Image 1 (cartoon, rainbow, N blue to C red):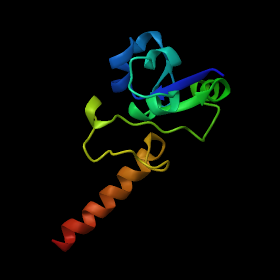
Image 2 (cartoon, rainbow, N blue to C red):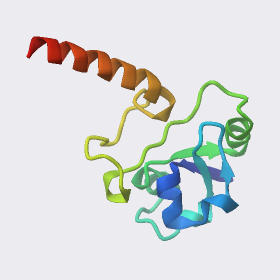
Image 3 (cartoon, rainbow, N blue to C red):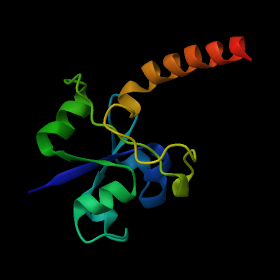
Length: 117
């Protein structure tokens, strides 16, 4: 079965020229399976996890490319690829899909902490 790996642009720069790859509607890049051959891991899933990516079937990748889905697969930039230190393997809700909601929640929490201090 053919899979695509959705990664952030920062990660994609390490493996290919992102301009030559497909960009999803949320600004991330779709890599090919062969792009991850140099990544540690025995399976494609392990390699995708190493780069903070999400495995997508052909249909899922097509839907993400054209913006036909509201259920976007999440990906992130691991700290060893230049991501933030506190961005350890997020759960499915703390991904790029929910980054706007998360940032608003974080700001609200930050405002409360400032008021308490």
